[in-house]
Length: 85
Length: 371
Image 1 (cartoon, rainbow over the protein chains, first blue to last red):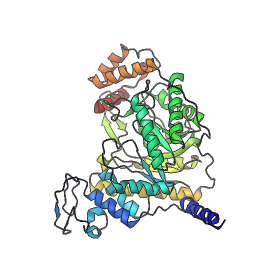
Image 2: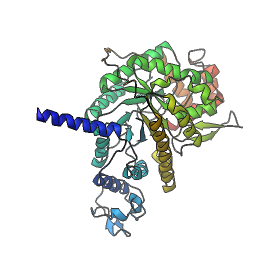
Image 3: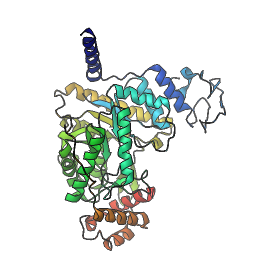
Image 4: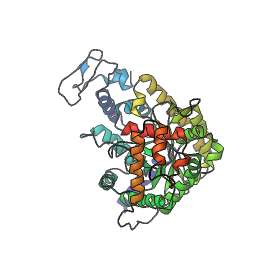
């Protein structure tokens, strides 16, 4: 019975969040992944990386951010193209 | 509550434009064209995760492009489209599914833009048949979007009523695309007040706003034709139309900003896109404060439909083939007009004799772009 009530409470909270508030919060981690995916999707970005073939192993170097498109330590926080700089 | 939404597909420019809005938690719902990924072998996990976030929050809506609702003959591609819809409907929780009015003239199933069809009992029956199949597949509310393109003022005036006759049997709804209406206001010299009362506004669950372009007209050199090309900022007039229309749509749930990636290739374009969205959101926020009634219609038929073999019309199919060929091969509107008057469409329900030359020019441009 307690478990059922707990499940019901979760549903109510979910209902309230999605119907009474309009805000959709996307996790920072997912936003970062989207930004990286978009930056390296064949566009010229302000940090200087142009990746014409994102499926290849060839690495392009970002002069400004000091990282490359195969590097998970891309300086996302300071990259203008990713929307944060 | 009305949700400020974006049409978001796997397109680098669209995603770059939307990203700041996602970061600011401004986007309340996403409209995804689930049938537009046929060329993509590996969909990035982050894109699936994005869709799933909105899906889990009951904020994902689906907008089909390539079903070709009113093709006179049922095709294997339409069987595949429904199979694909069934698959994505299992993976994602769509709040509703929509498609476009019209039939596609493109070279293959994945190219083209919709153009109009005659409003007859035969086309009505085919449309209802297709909508029932879509509902049986996705089991969520199903709707149709009004078409920007029309051959004549008579067609413009009858479009809303025909849409209602199509969706009513499934308790379906309408996407009211305000830029599509804006095109018609300009191209046919009709006022918003005159046209909007011809639409069943109580069946509007979604509104689209977008931008377009102006094209020169050989047949009317003194004026330009408004085209629904989705590649520019939203005109101020369309925002005004949104302000005027919103309070008359008691079942409105989503207002969606649409723009193609091709129109978002520069930072300037993307900045304007953000401004357009924030204006949309401002209008929606005000409307939500003033909105007193809860939504009255869930747009579910609350039944499954028994459908046997798909309804078809060989006559309609052959006329569509002939029309597509004429539009794709005509050298200009005069040449097209001459071919039409010597075709099976002459003195038919298509009423080719009443078509406005500038609209025939537009139909040629649409068909030849995708041929």
